[in-house]
Length: 171
Length: 175
Image (cartoon, rainbow over the protein chains, first blue to last red):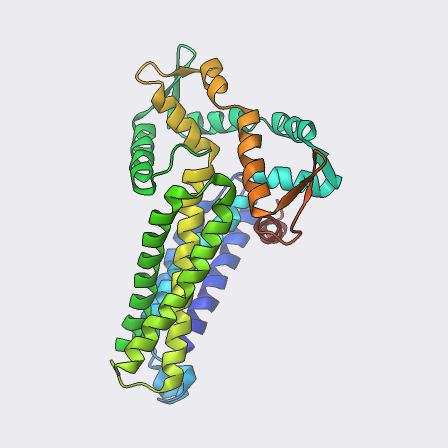
């Protein structure tokens, strides 16, 4: 459990460092890459600790506290990184389902036309098309949307997933 | 060291079993039953690491006290749970529900000449988005319909929990 505790403490330290970075950064928008770098640095610290610190000298050699789950703790640390990024991304993006639920929750009850009005007001498609163009996945040629090379790669991955999952187009 | 590898291994193998079950069952699941089906699949698969660790314990694969095996079972369930969470929210979720992914596929279907905004909106528009989502939310019981009016079904659903956590992070960031 010593290793689990170390990994969890380091993960929360990485989250704190990222929050501090976001508060100080003059740039708006998502800082997901920054968290990736911070998480790698703290993973390095964890590896340093498990290689250099002989816990049995400090805590003894038996008991729950010194169970040797070094790799497990490291794997859990690595898996917690995307978990945090999922929640961090949600701070700046609103999915249509969440918007519908929050609107119904605020209003108490809504009709289909009220919900449609909320969806049209949010302009989900235009915002995302703009994002795709800005990220370089899609380009506009003579008023028509065309996939760029990176967009084609995403489409190929989606096709593979369609074969694997046997489900048609989502959205 | 051996126990450590068993723990991670049991978690990864259980995740593999989850993926297999998920890939077989998801083909027949209707969009409105998607959330419920995924949840049942994840919960059922959470028992796998415990079963695997029990088999390893029964065959005395390594010399360790009982509490170490119990701990290993719990940790491997955690590894498997995290793998499922990341898969559902980072891979399957975007494939099934992301508007961006749907747009990429619609544009791809337009061929080398692409697609105009009008053509795109004739295939995929706010009405489609709302209809698909209402089906899913009604199916999962997150909202209920009474006389043509929609109300919240479960006040403690995933969306509200996720929103509360994201809200906490947003508050900390201060933007």
